[in-house]
Length: 431
Image (cartoon, helix red, strand yellow):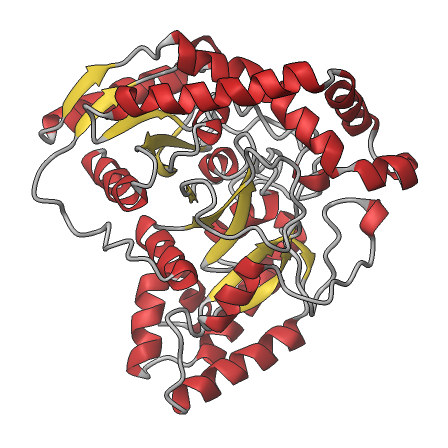
């Protein structure tokens, strides 16, 4: 295989070759660096990238393998969203208020990935504090379109071959939506599965760290390497077809025609492959959680940015300041009522999901919007985020403009392994 093509290896195959000794971390890293050099000028996935530093880390990974100390992610490439602290790279949170900031320590998720042997390729572009103004990243399939956000650089860089996995964070739809826009796999695990220590947290009730990869198997590999949990092999065919609920949710009117058609095709393909597919309407208690999502998110974010609002307000965008003002002005009553509505929705959802293996639902309203000024609508993501349940988007089609479309699989709380397995199952069922 030509060196540059090594950048296209799935993480699962790269890991196999690295373990067997038929591929070195340095050779793999050099191929990925060549890919970055060729495409980064157009994609602009990185907020910070130092090839010489990356090569030193690859050499250390080879030394660890030679000494028999290779971790489960040894030699594999990782992009780190720039709301996660790194001790050896700037952590600037997508804001000029933090330009040049150098933390003393790595975020917990970064430290755990490094302990497992992952090579950090750089810091990936985030929107402002993972919430507002987009960065310069473009969609790797068409640079005239957004990659989505807020995990813009990780979503664009993974399918471009810049790393095997990119860390993302999701408060509304910031892992699943950009992954769908970029033709990647986006996995938001159960809330708090990956520790948030060293993350620039905006919303205590919502923020969840996950991964964006090229394949579902790669997502399982990285999740296992980071957490020590068993995520199985989602590429192994299960011994039965799933019981699926088909749910467009309370925001169905925002789905583009191509998304409605895609969900119909997905349901038909699943049924043909043996699944039972049952239409699902969510109860009012669950839907109420979605209605109050903005008031909780903005209320918690206004608290999270107390220092910035008091000392660096001029360096925040007007849109962010406006949202933070709304969050602060609402007072404790609506804020606490919103959190209570979240708790009620989670309780009600236990009975909703109980008859099913998974819910089949849109990943995004449609294709990635044109332009880089807006990262798209999280209308099909916020509900699952506030419910704290695992969800995965898998790429299955292209839309009328030739851009990727994904479908989303949602499972019950703690059923992360099943989410990945059924996500891969539906991807295969759709051909």
